Image (cartoon, rainbow, N blue to C red):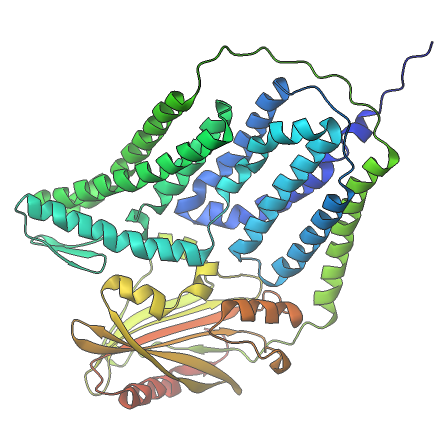
Amino acid sequence: MPLPRQPSPLRTWFPLLPAFICLVVAILQMRWDWSYSDDYRYGWFVPPLALYLFSLRWRDRPPTSRPAPHLLAWTLLGLFVATTLLIKEANPEWRIVSLALAAATAAAALLAAGHIGGSPWIRHFSGAATFLLTAVPWPSALEHALTRFLMPANAAAVVSLLHSLNIPATRRGHLVTLASGTLGVEEACSGIRSLQCTIMAAWFISELLHLPWPRRFILAAAAIAIAFLTNILRTSSLALAAANSGLAAVDSWHDSAGFLVLTLNLTLVLVIARKLSAPHPNPSPTPSTPAPAPPPIAATGPALCLTLILTGTTLTEWWYQRSEPSPLPPWHLAPPQNAAGFSLATPSDRIVRLLRFSRAWSAKWLTPSSKPVHAFYMEWDKGRVPPENMRSHQPGICLPGMGMTLIAEHDPVTLSTAGFPATARVFEFKDRGQPVFVFYMVQESSPIDPSSSPDSSNPLSLRLAAVRSARRNPGQRFVELGIWNEPSPANARAAFLDFWTAALRTGPL
């Protein structure tokens, strides 16, 4: 009697191809944050660790069962990836795109597991498949909200500790003033980095120990609490060093304290994970039985998913090439070097790596009426896209963290930039009792279709308008200027317009 014909390796492993494609695209999408953001450098380690977890789960995989076709799921996945790629082309820096692609990779891997080994394989490989999600950069709105909470909270905890030790200190926003100087609890000290790394480690250890799902979530919650507490300990230690030895001691111990806290976090997570791990002998790997040859409809799902992804990629390229708008006439703002009290500020290497601008300047000066001014101007060339946080960076969100109080947002100012109108938003703050008027503008380097009527204060509206208008990587300009001690919005507006008229130049910076 002839032996049953076994499916070819190509047919067996073909369902993994959509997951591989999604993984490659997701890594290419997230590489910018992994490379330029200190908070996400650990992301480069996550894909190899995910493959290692898959290898462990492969060794103890359960026996195969009859594969389910999941045709609808494959179809929805293909449409989802194709739509995500369409949006990504106009918004390549958007972190929601990174989340969508990572989720698509996990879904494709689980569908492939179900296709090869049936439903038991989906449950068995679910922890390894979702591990990539721990490397996804958090949406900027969530990250900023958490950072705005953590920075002043850490500063408040530091001040309370110093007061308990009879060390004089005051807090203003996320700034702590000591006798030796002012210590800033910046974003890098907010605890976001250690929180993200600790959550990733907790998920990895959970899968390594094969914890039941309820215990995995308990470990993740414990990891979050550990990261919060140890970061307060780290910040307080640095503040004590600054109080006793001066601010120079903070620079000496800053990085070492970060590594010590991360080591402490991983140790505590591992201890808790061992406590949560039920004592049981390690089962020997169960060899899988050969999977039955899938019916024709089962092979249709992965092929349909691939077809939709490839078709969507082709249509996306056609959509953006068919009607790309012509760029606006180039313009830039020149710093007022002849103004009284003028001084340029050189950005740090970290800021240059993080913001990735093509050209920029930051300066302080005095208006003719001796009012202090601080301005930022940045340009990104076509194809060199700013990070997402430049779109979501708004004075009303960021400046309160520096101790300023938002009073109101006034009517915007309409400006002329090389013959094309632009709009600057106007915010009024109080800074130590003094009024501060902040003018803020982000302009694309190609015109936005007026019929789409995007709301310039709504980033989602701008992103969807970019897709509808087939506008990708047009280049951007960012302007933020604050004027202190002007008595009224009208005076501040007039001073800003005087600066704009004198600083506007045609051509590149």
